[in-house]
Length: 231
Image (cartoon, rainbow, N blue to C red; front, side, top):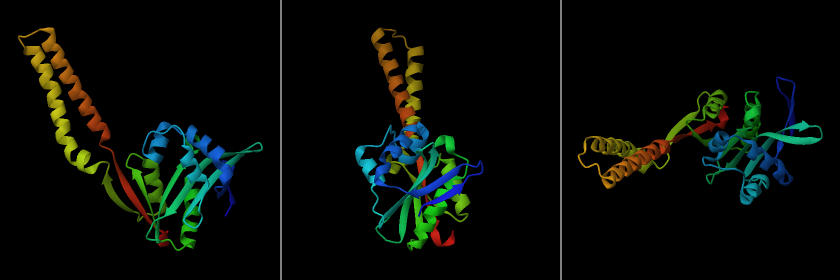
């Protein structure tokens, strides 16, 4: 499954399956990703892979999953610049995929090469659908999927849909109102005691914190579905 590709700038890229001994370059690759890239890939703050994650990402059960590394040579040492993987879902006809490319190696076609080979493998194993959950802020991933499959199916979902999707805007409005009410009351109040001022300032701060927290949490993702037979 290993093959070499020539990038537009002349760099030789090797795409090959992940091996257990790749734990070192996999960890280094993850550490060097930008905070945004880590969040887009793992949907949470992450500094490096945990030992459990490292085992799961490098010791592959090839009957149920596939992981491809994109590496370049630096003298006699391999440097990981991208990785794409899928895991077969319980229905046996679809799989969930993920891909990430090193920040400094983007816009060179590496993502396209990784996904093209991953889709070929999925097709050879009679998988029909590849799907991935992607934050709507991740424009690069959405663009790649649209380029690979112009008819890509997209479903929208929300983090914490019941709470943050339905209730966040009313609660955010209440938080904003609470901030302005406390500030207004301080300005026009006849009671300028330190206790009263402190209570209003604390109330305004709490409202501001609630409003900012709700606004930051209103993130959502899409589920992309690539129909393998149409690619």
